[in-house]
Image (cartoon, rainbow, N blue to C red):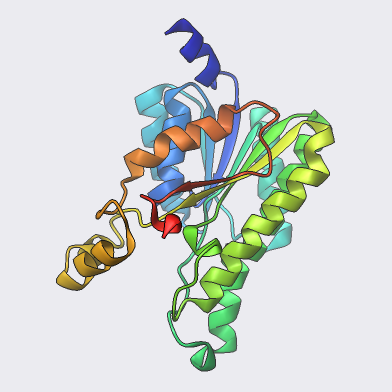
Amino acid sequence: MEILEQMFSLKGKKALITGGYRGIGLMMAETYAQVGADVALVARNLDGCREAAAKIAEKYGVKTIGKSMDVLDSKKVDFVVSEVAEAFGGIDILVNAAGVPGAQKPVLDMTDEDLDEAVGIDFRGTFMVSRSVGRIMVRQKSGKIINIASIMAKISARYMSAYCASKAAVVQLTRVMALELMRDNVQVNALCPGYILTDFNRNFFETDTGKKLIKKMIPMDRVGSLEELKSSALYLATCPAFLTGAEIYVDGGHTLV
């Protein structure tokens, strides 16, 4: 047990998590705090971030920060990242969990606004936050960037063109940054979840249509849970330096068929 605790401990580490007040981002923040990391939660929803940060601090006894940040505003991104780094004395882990499913329409019906929303938040936001935090990590000569991509980076789905393209771009960004930053001891990897049950999709997956979709597409005949992402989330935050540019699929075998 002592070896495992040493391998997966994040005591003294500082994590910044976009979209950190709910869903996958919140799960990762809680997971890291549970093993000793101080965590900063950032999103457009200031109240949500502050509330989640306060609960994590009380529950796990770590330092937390909750701040408002629009990932589409590069100046705001740089400002908030700088504030977090100053408050924490650095940033060891970045999780890019901010994202939107985007409009689900045929390509020919997509508006410019639909495209801008999905590509803006899912890809451009990930790019800008990674760039800002990456500069700090290069100066530190250490760091881990974890991009939340999706199985949709690898498979195709009707009416999800902008989302699929954006997540594929996130995977390619992951690979390129891994190459560029590896000599500065910064690892960049992507966590690619399949269908994961959350408060936002629970109602759909419990319908007959949702159940039929699961049976048709997922070999395990069920959706995953946030709990089942924890081990992968923790591994990518503590993994050896030799692991970089990887895509970790947690999808119940979805991408196998």
